[in-house]
Length: 273
Image (tube, rainbow, N blue to C red):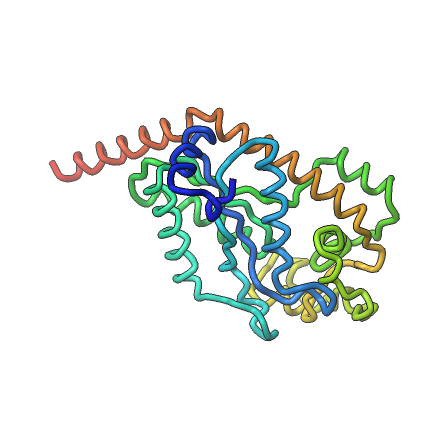
């Protein structure tokens, strides 16, 4: 159920019929090579979430584009908010989702650059007492059997990463008019490996993605196909629907979170005595 399409009465009914679960799909606006649209991650996240909701119903929040994408500010079309504003905005949106009746919020991630941000964000939910739980989930992850099926059923490259075979195939399935395979620059997706001397020693820095992939493409997209993209999205949707089912049947997280805050209050009372 799409939040924006519901009437007030439908919204009230949806709270109960979905187990008070709301999904917030998060992407970003960034360059995806020269052949894919800026909103690729956002579009894919929304598509997978919509397909999942057909299997395991939930209310789907409107498009949310404000992901962590500061490493792509050197290209036009990128929207990169400050880290402080990203966190504050997401906090306020989650508060509003809760005010509207949902006590289980799932951040459905469609952009790899959000991994650390969302991991940290869910930890900040313990900063102060809340009567709702926020979960994070990466939409693109497949299990070994699903990956093996795709590799055996289609001609695929050996390397993946960004604006690659997987993402290109998904957009080809969703909206082929947005894909411009004639604009590919062969070899541009090969890592420049300028960060290897550091990563070999387990070091990382914010500039590392730019060091290796300054053109915002990693992994060969030349073998992409709409058929592959359709199956990939289907697998992702099936996996996510199972995760939502688990969230609906989770009766421990909120209870234990409340217990956690009660114990925090006990410690505070000791200090004040």
